[in-house]
Image (cartoon, rainbow, N blue to C red):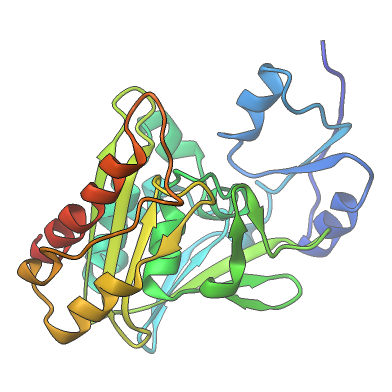
Length: 262
């Protein structure tokens, strides 16, 4: 049996200090960390629980920006009337993450900090050109995701919120693995203050990425038809028992077209 210390700090500053200890792990919703611990893949000496920090929770919409606290659950984002009105595609994405239990425990900040290569939220953050706020700085989406399970977060740096610019139009399509509900391929498209953006999750060996060829096609003509015939290279894509790299490459423009058309 694993033994560990458990800390429930009363402030973000205290949480950041506690997280600097050797082999300490931040726990948000616990939907990734706890299964890893059960499987013996993670054995932290201390867990730093963020659930008692109200400043990390909540949703506000002001000045063309939707700001979501890091400890806001997927279910809360999906059910938010403000998000449904401002960025319907974001609410739709949140409503299809995992199952009901995962949506009611998992959090935006936890998903982004973990940066699973098949997670849904990274596609929305990159696809909308969002800004990740931490206790130390603001990080643009293009600078945040550094590879599989790797982000720009430093030791003791905690995500506090994410600001999503409200787009003129956006869409999300997910081709899911039916058992895990993770994306075999997921595509988020948007056109707005950050330009035309297409972000893909589930397909890349290094995690979420943008597709410049689709972005150029949609910038010229925002339509499902514009995605037809756009070739996505398969060189850096995943091959596994669920699908080959070529299969995933073929899915990307199809799902982008559906996201635009939907």
